[in-house]
Image (tube, rainbow, N blue to C red; front, top):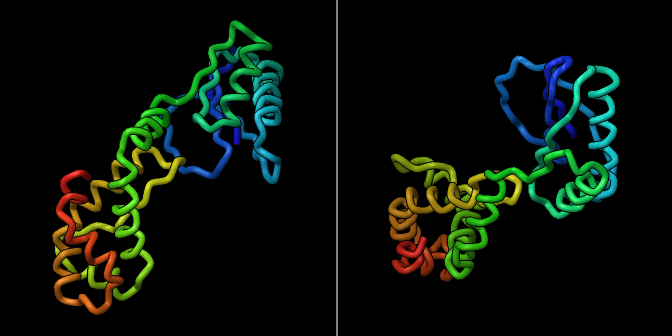
Length: 195
């Protein structure tokens, strides 16, 4: 989906999201949305769609697009490069919040994250364990990181830390219901300290 935010007759920018998302914008501007449907999300297709949106903004709404902000997926890199080549006056950049999420994924030790994710997944995917977790006071639903959900890496670690004492209690009370390696990882203090 490509969304245009603009004020008639004035400068505007586009936001490019090529997968479903829920966003809330406070704006006094109008909005024009293209649904991409089953279109293959290659860089060239994304560039064409962005150019079409820019043209609609100019022709239909009498405004000039001066900036395009996208996420930081590889297809968006190719789209941004193509847009810059075609119009050097256009400011084209990736979303800094999304970039910080990607940076967080790069600097978090995978040796810790893989264990945290296995534990979180284990509780989410096993009904009985999830029910016991819900019954514990002050717990939250275990979260898993995804590239498209900003701050998800941090949220995954935060929910692990918040739930760990409850995880320990559940392991202690129901050890036979756990895969041994998961139980050991929950009890491993180094995973907790490094998270």
